[in-house]
Length: 363
Ligand SMILES: *[C@@H]1O[C@H](CO)[C@@H](O)[C@H](O)[C@H]1NC(C)=O
Ligand SMILES: *[C@@H]1O[C@H](CO)[C@@H](O)[C@H](O)[C@H]1NC(C)=O
Ligand SMILES: *[C@@H]1O[C@H](CO)[C@@H](O)[C@H](O)[C@H]1NC(C)=O
Image (cartoon, rainbow, N blue to C red; front, side, top):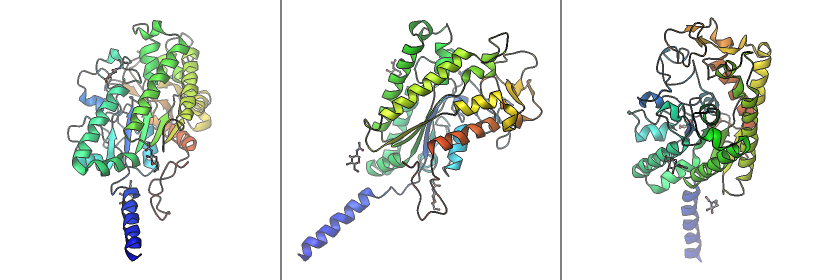
């Protein structure tokens, strides 16, 4: 009897170790486009999608360009900060080590990248979502070699994942006649094609251990300054906005269908379409003064496709919704992040008030 019970205790102890979390930190792995890039494209020397010159980064750290396509923080920066998670470094940074990955996670986001391989071909170099997932598999091998299969599995299962792509699949693919997708598909079949592709990618991430995944939807991308200059009226492009809404609805439906297909996982979808649309219509309600033109612009030349040292800056960057022709400003990103946090309803990873690190997101 004695032997049996001590064996039972031993077995329990082993199970206890096995189900215990790993002795590593909770970090994030971020997959995205220019809205989340923190420097990958700086290392893609042939890429035409670059945030390598002033005045990108003017309100971040030392004020020098850091690869972010905005003046300050990205939406993922702000959401991660609020969750108490470290900011993951760019995958392509040559100084990145296994210890950095274990401490901070990795960001694979790349300006010009899309859900589809063919998106953004015009930029010559960019990391598509498939390519980013391939790189993540490489990262997993590095970590397995460093800490072993079992600990690595726990590390990747405890991590948080962000998937934030889609606008380039429209702006730099479907809506441009130079891309064959623009005439091979119609609005409905193109979104079906995106959903099929995204579903496969999310399943791959799950098979690689991702258990807590936040998928970001699209904003009213027909209202980015670049889209407004397409019409003489300077109004938002209605068709482009409708595509964003359809994409969000389809993605939300896809994510809702996943729990039954993917075990032990929390996949969440959130978008900030409505609030951004309201900011654009009623900027002053939210403390903004300009919601239709970029803060950084090249004199009267519109669209100047990027912000460059010769561009002029608006006087007060905090009251402009858009930083350049494509991308929101730091203050608009803060508003978008707040909205997404509400939608995702997550807790801090390290709540100082809690007895232990609270696993987020809840539910
Ligand atoms: C959470 O807090 C613990 C103890 O203060 C710390 O060791 C750990 O690195 C923190 N984790 C994160 C993700 O910040
Ligand atoms: C997309 O690119 C990946 C490589 O990154 C490749 O493995 C995959 O087969 C491609 N998919 C399609 C549909 O072309
Ligand atoms: C889900 O969790 C259960 C219980 O912990 C485990 O037995 C099962 O293998 C897990 N499934 C996956 C796909 O991780």
